[in-house]
Length: 207
Image (cartoon, rainbow, N blue to C red; front, side, top):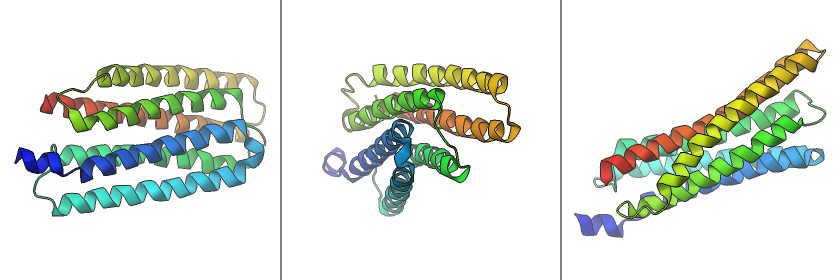
């Protein structure tokens, strides 16, 4: 059985493909915050990445349906791929609202949060890549601990951004719009922590 597992890399390939889409989506969101004049094109790019993420998720679930042997618990594979897709969905939702709500310019707080998000997704991708060799996971645990730290940073940034919004904004409708965008962005960072928790569970079961 172990020889079969070592030869079948399809699940690892798909998980790494999914994590690459997550990073690509987060990087596009950060670019959106830095190059907002090009927002229509970048939001379209994020939308395409969302479709790519859905495709990888469907491929992974289809492979699970027809595979008798998996490299680790099939429930963990399902949870991991879906939670990575959740990150993409939150980013997509936030990016779409920037154009839907006709936001004129991006705030420094949003730009700061996108940087945190990109860092978290890159750490997630590194950890997913190390799932191929759970007996020697390298720096995986350090990466996962850093994701947890970044989730705390994201929480603090979100609280500060919302507090500033309430203190300085004069248009209540604009406050509502920005509050939703901030919360969706912070939830994307939260979803990164969900992925880290899933990976930690996989490591505990298999080492």
